[in-house]
Image (cartoon, rainbow, N blue to C red; front, side):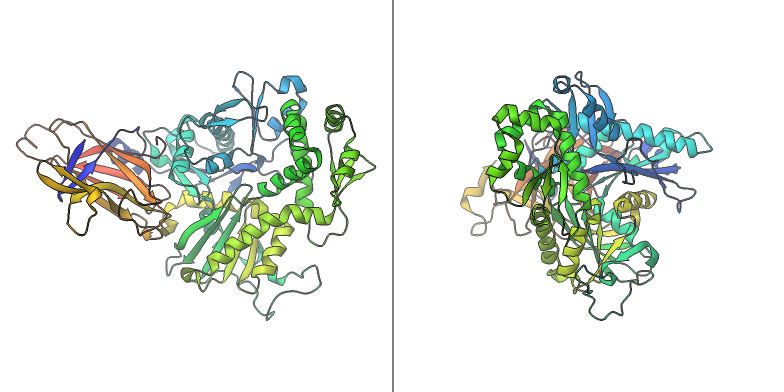
Length: 633
């Protein structure tokens, strides 16, 4: 189908499903004007998750979720493991500590029929062709739609949070008085953000008719919103802490952390989570104290899970990959027990530690290995020639300090390398502080490595409640979404169009002759460029015209690229990433009759955490239903 736009531009179009923004409808405008009474933020993490809330009448008070029953001894359980247990009939059973403990108590044969999901958030980051049909694999090997797994988890948090909010609220809360905020890594692309929104719709946090009730918050951005308010007593300044070798790397010893930020200060937030490390660079603007992003969010899959994977690889090296795979499949609950035992030891690992760490192997592991291989675990260790792992007389794996270093080092090196590369960028010069936040930032191994590598360049600061920084910042974002005033575009976005063919400028293989006219195909009509500064509320407008009278729908393909030097949608690195759908109402009597071309004006907003689109039928001034879909490709 070919469609002319008023600027003599021809567009190629194709079919897609629908999503997003109905906020221009009259009923949506009315709903929007009604103030929210409470903001509930859900920090959906790879390793652990939690929620917090604040009443808009008392925004200074952020209420953390109540402590969880069944938590690990010695751990502050204001967050819960991101673990979900479904029955063999695919019904919700439990989440968090309860899911973990229930799965542990199942008979090994029975456990193979149940579906236990752990650290499943990372799959959404790693899948390149994410759709509503994407599946996740449970520990037992059974598969289920990913959207349903995420919806089960969000529904659990919704019910928990609303019960707690109602307990603390003096008035009866209507459903549309709650604004929900869900956190996602800043390095996630649009399909993954849309996926979380769709999961929230499925979990009935909000309905499709009130999308403005749900905000997607970027994790390091939320942390930054919280960090800019911190005072001296709320942070740990690593440069003022003696290092384990007896001296500090402090260069002049005279720069304690300011009691507050100064206007104009630049800083990096490194959100070191379970799955990803996310880096954001912000400047506090004068005089209003809003935030300006100085460089596009960057990062990658360098979270604490990398240490777990290194431990699993070590086990495969000692006992054989085929045995570990078989043990996972036949004794899934015992495998989870082993990973929990390692997690607890991982948290206690410190640099410069002389004695090793003991990890208890489940009895079923020792027994299964003997039956599977006909020899003992101890013999396997001896034969593996891995001197950094021993077998203790108490029946435990003993990891030497050298072994723990080996497990941590690749992940930590990736994080430091990424921060160092970011600090070389022109836009990042003059940064005064580096905030380490997220669960992995609690690790002394990471803290010391970052201080050693970067402590001379800027001050390394850790908030006291480092594991809850994102959650508290997400609540603040929900209370005031305009606090981040300028963001940087992570990608170049545009649509494929046909322009008048110019001999000598356009390649001959792009020539299309249509009704006697020569056109150049596949030109990228750019909306925004990668790393372009976009202010909140800043929009890109384009006009489109239906090709024929009575046409009910215009569908426009969106393309993206990680570079800004693209000319054609066929250039290397350019990919189709979504589509805009414009539903066309019938023309009002007397408004468009006799008009040769009907103009639809689309407005795209890129300065928010999600890309949004609105559209108007110019002649009738009526809102056109406009949706963007990134999940149907």
